[in-house]
Image (cartoon, rainbow, N blue to C red; front, side):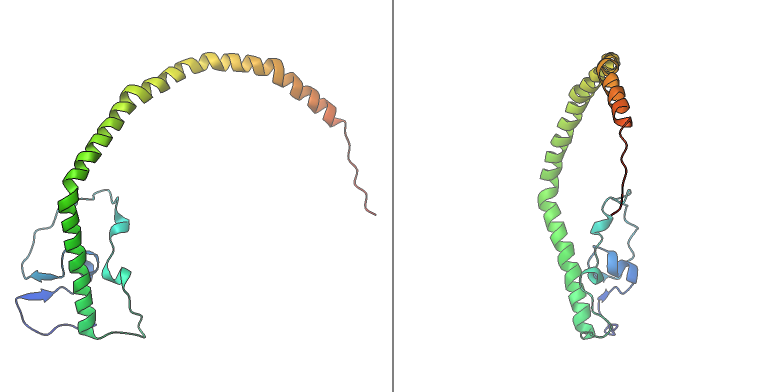
Length: 161
């Protein structure tokens, strides 16, 4: 991969960290930006941090022209950036509204229906446990003990012909 020698108002960022992983466009003005806030502090979407080299990779035995590589890299990053911005502009607010409704309903159902039902069942379980243990002791335990005594007297001998 080569380095552009031309002087212009814009330049191509060649720093590996920003070049590979950033969703910002490659072509940028020579300004120093403040560090952007971390919008994914818990790294929920680490699988979406896809760079140009993760998608398009040329092995060391085959290389395209340097300007083609740089141009395709710039086109990839710019299209990815603008497509993401366009889709988030169109879909972010409506989806946030819908997801807010969904999670609000789920929270309400969980707090006011699911947990009271679970607590009611947990309150009944000690009584049911006593009844179940009594039924098991009356019916299953004697049956298991008699089957064990019956089957313990069986002996199997293997002979080889």
